[in-house]
Image 1 (cartoon, rainbow, N blue to C red):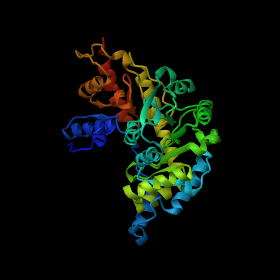
Image 2 (cartoon, rainbow, N blue to C red):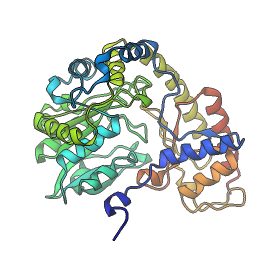
Image 3 (cartoon, rainbow, N blue to C red):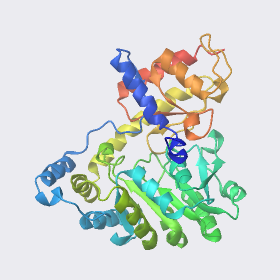
Length: 399
């Protein structure tokens, strides 16, 4: 008899967290390593949000259990914020506050996916998406995008992958890991396709405020209202407000789905930390000035990283349009000689970059595809330049 359940044993470790852990280990040993692995703003949480949490700590009401689905005032504020930022109108009853964005992802798949249901998952994908699909008994159907397409899938690709068992499609724009942003026309086409065939859309909008240049974020249920009865919107405070450690996310969806997910949450975690909810309330109901300031720094770093990576022979780097990631295609370097080593895949190449260039990057295999790598530009300008320079110097030895 197995000591660990087969279902849990099959869960893959988080590759992004593993890369960051390795970087920390090397730094602790005195090695100067630049970490491009974790998707986390390098700014502190804005002061007014922290002060709201401090005040909440002193309020005895926050020392007790609270409603499983979230504090009523926070749910109302999330509904208002969603209408303000994307134009999507939802009642507070359609909001479930979760323990971070990952919890919202888990709840969403658990609520609608059953054994044998197929989920269309564009590749490259964020490392977490496949695991809750599998835990729910779902079947992952990969739909691959590449650098030539700007890492955006098309309706034709989705239709080619659709079967009678297709239950849902995962849609992410801006994208983690690629930084791709879909145009309004592309979103409308995919939304209309989903509505035509009754396919659920799980859309992750956590990077909605991190778009650059002329690119814009568009919420699919706003662009295509016909999908709203079969659409779940995922979001949270982590990326927009530099609150990754506060662990507050949410899902917005049809009332029956939210009720089912809330029932699951009542047994899994109960309510989200009340102090963190108070901080989230200050975040979503407050000014976006601090968000705009952080975005300006990310934009500058984005342009720097894109320019430097594009100058490396053998590297093809689509310009990041959103989030805070570059996703260069390094497949031309696989099988070449680099400083007397010959990488066999991007996992191997990433290990060589860590060893010789002292830079921690996440290989494409973590995101379901070989050939690419994710580099976060959510780090200080000097560290970014130093790390990419070492990568460029190392890869320049390729023959």
